[in-house]
Image (cartoon, rainbow, N blue to C red; front, top):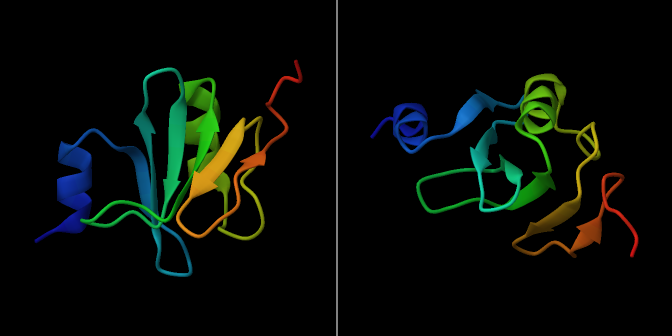
Length: 92
C-alpha cells in the first residue's frame, strides 16, 4: 500500500510528511476545511478546522509540527486531545 497515493486519491491536498514522521494534509469537511495530523490508513490523530481552504493549506505547507499550526484555526479535535478553540473562533 502506498499511503500518500491513497490519501491523494481520497481527496487530501497539501499532503506532506512532518519532520517527526507524521503525515498531514487538508480535506474538505461539511462547513470547514480540516488540517489533519497523523493521517494513516485508519484515520487521523487530530485535526484543526479552518473556515477557508487557503488558510488550512497555508498552515499545512508552512507548519513544522511543533506547537499549534499557524493561521486562524477555529477548533482542535482528535483522539486523546482536549477540544480547544483557536484564534479563528468567534465568541458568541
